[in-house]
Length: 266
Image 1 (cartoon, rainbow, N blue to C red):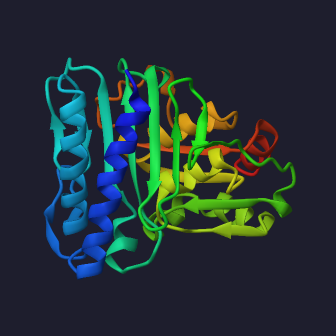
Image 2 (cartoon, one colour):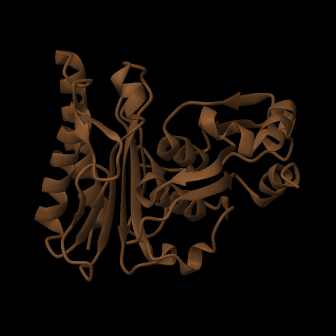
């Protein structure tokens, strides 16, 4: 199965619809709450519809788990397709140009069963995805993480909600003190995929808030590109990706930087 071709077709549709909605001013129109309780905007719904049409056409026996509509298909369906139509909806709502779509294809039920994944920047069109040989590509060209072993030289994104700061105050303060180039950008899938593509040195999800469709594909890309991943709240090998788990993790360009980040958590 040429999964890369499916991802490319889905991302073509997603990018086209997202840009059209932003152009006509309808992207930020609120509709309802999605299956997982988050507010759904027009851009979320329309991009999801476009992606699902492609997935259902090419993978009709799949189990789809998508942020807005929830589960579609039989729980035993294969492959599992995880979809985050718009990761960074708040950015899109406010016309901040940093949001993405993420798709993950899983031939089984576990993280180790992921066979393909991709993330597309819905603003500038950058695509970070795996080909069918397990290589990671940035806009069609082979890519890899950009290593640094010095926190003071590292470009690192962090994700934490204001209401969760009390639960991670010391680690967050220590990180901000040690990292020169810290960023809070608002699209975890894209920020994690940036590590795989060498655009960022690390991404830190401090509190377990992210769901499977938010991050599993991007983390697969980091590992496939040769990067380092550590889950902070679970043994990922035992997690059934069909279940509503939430994750905290560190994704880094290599183990040296990853362990430096973790040393501040002690």
